[in-house]
Image (cartoon, rainbow, N blue to C red; front, side, top):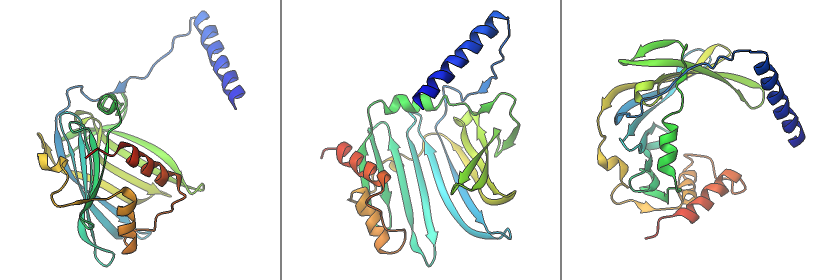
Length: 253
């Protein structure tokens, strides 16, 4: 594999050199980037899933907030009667405090870990990610110009799912509308509403009062014991990585 990559690299270099000698002109497609001075903002969103007949099977409400420094907070409202009681699942990356925490209302618990060095720089670079090509289809959603992009994903190695996104350059290429299709049929849709410009409530970026600290595994086990989610697989590499990072970066009391 390494040898093949080397051969490909040299082949590409050779083509560039020959084409340059022949005076070939290359066209680099311009990209749409978010503004460097992006505002702080918040919005509500809803994700709806549909069955084969087009009937709604479930919905999930969220609130997403971004501060001027790039810190983010995503709150998912858990409300699925018969499966779990109502509550909130909160994921926060607080650049100012240098901490990431996840809190679960149902367990009245949270997990926290220190941000890796350079987190703020990574956020700044992420803000410059392209929204889409300059010639992308544009429209307006909730009062903001959005750029349409799409991508295909393979699920289970056999099924192909189409994802469409409408991203707002003025809001750091944040997705305001998303549609997932399978065999041409819409199976999930997410749309933002009530977009608010300005610094979000500071309390969103703080650990809720009265919550007990747990490790990510303890929170997972708490929910699994009540059949709200599947039991954790201790051999899963992803879970092992999460626990390793938690133990390594847990803020010192």
